[in-house]
Image 1 (cartoon, rainbow, N blue to C red):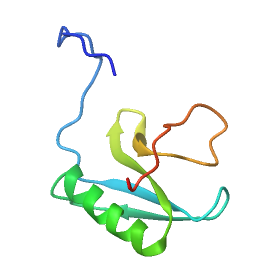
Image 2 (image 1 turned 180 degrees about the vertical axis):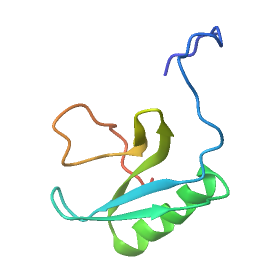
Image 3 (image 1 turned 135 degrees about the vertical axis):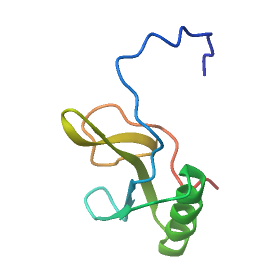
Length: 97
């Protein structure tokens, strides 16, 4: 990880509080179950739920924030691996340990 100071004017847009998320549980590279979580307290509550659920299913997950901008609703990849991704992916599986 590299840490650098930043000029806060370097971004084009930002959202308000993110309370909607999507979690994809991966049983294998091609078998998944997707869930939307609405009105979450914060990302920590979502991670806690996803970690517990993934452990009970014995699988990994990918976590996205659902955000909206002028182009519509989209997903921002926050954590986890995506075994179906053709391009770069995070290297750390979730849940940890």
